[in-house]
Image (cartoon, rainbow, N blue to C red; front, top):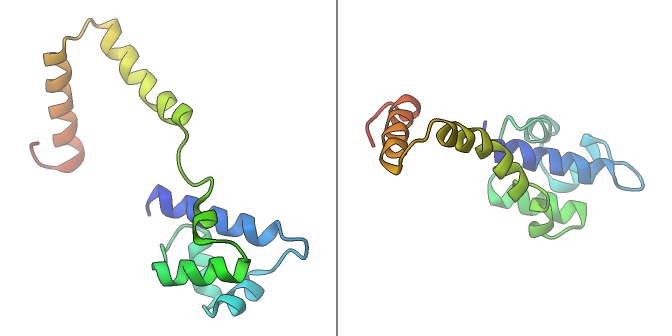
Length: 116
């Protein structure tokens, strides 16, 4: 499942459990008119709901659809932390821009199964 789907599921769980009355999955599912098993799969990041379901969940939680996504994006610092080892690798080996392009070509083939 996508990383974004997992983060959205975590955010829904967070909004559900941080309520003063700390709703159960059953209570939120009933309010959003979805099944408990589907809500459970969403919260675990196993399913990514359609926008209509996301809107129903946001409405049930009393938040805007935008607030449902708050905190689900990767921060710039997280992205930089992810890319730092690649940058360090290229710098330590004195790779030129042409070398980096070749390396990216290999990576594209490795991870997509086709040439770029």
